[in-house]
Amino acid sequence: MKLIAFVFPGQGSQYVGMGRELFENFGVAKQIFEEADDALHFSISALCFKGPEEALKLTENTQPAVLTTSIATLKVLQAEKGIAPQLTAGHSLGEYSALVASGALTFSEAVKMVRLRGKFMQEAVPVGEGAMAAVLGMEREQVERLCEEISSGEVLTPANFNCPGQIVIAGHSKAVERAIERIKQEGKKAVLLPVSAPFHSPLMKPAGERLKKALEEISVGDLKVPVVTNVEAEINTLKDRVKGLLVAQVSSPVRWEESMRKIIEKRIEQVLEIGPGKVLSGLMKRIDSRVETKNLEDLQTLKSIEHSA
View 1 (cartoon, rainbow, N blue to C red):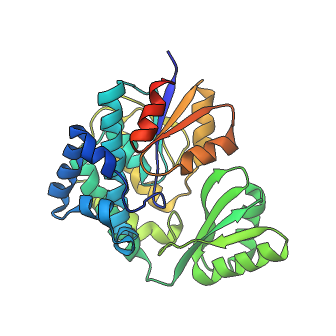
View 2: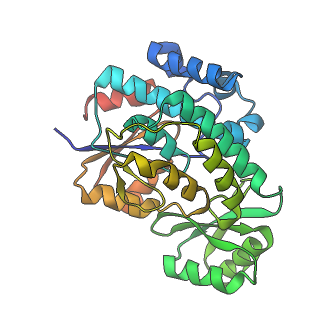
């Protein structure tokens, strides 16, 4: 039997139409979308299936929409294939999907929590004051040094260590602009990201405080499947640590490359990306192309999993 890890996408993987095929073909998927609509008191399913894209891209909508699609996809995988993972992880928002998959969070509590998380993150910094940029082709140490040199008293910090040669920085808009300018002068590439806030930077601390209060209202169950956390890139099996790690995650870098290396270290043979898009599969190919990766988001990708697991 193959050792398998499930990984779950974060913000940026959403698209209009996601989850619709599974909703129309599988009762377990339909049930999850209906549960999300009930929990949120509005039709997140209609937003996933029909858009409009502008509304789907709003952080407080994107987060529950991606989570719902991911968990609906997970339920189809479990019902149709009966595949169980040895480990799980999720990129930023995707960590909530991983925690639902592990049994630590119920789906309805998680979907309400990520809606609040999106709202808190959006409101932590006035629109226009924060930004993020993807830096391509630079080493971790170079990016860290650049952030220190250019910050000039403002916040500028690595936010996502995604894979070799792809690091995202976040902070005050002007500091991010200065960094992009410097990176281009050095002959490297930096691209401003179409996001509305500087996620995973210290500017998100107010969002973390609000999230901490909201998390007090929910209970965490035992982790039946260990979760590799964004904050530490280590395996967590302790339910008492879950809330603290989720609060820290909002203003800490996502250590994705290290998280995937931790999974590889545990002799995982196949990584299944569950939910919209193929972003994480692409990153894994650049982290270690020897690891078999597949993404699952619709009927076609579901068929391909039949032959491999």
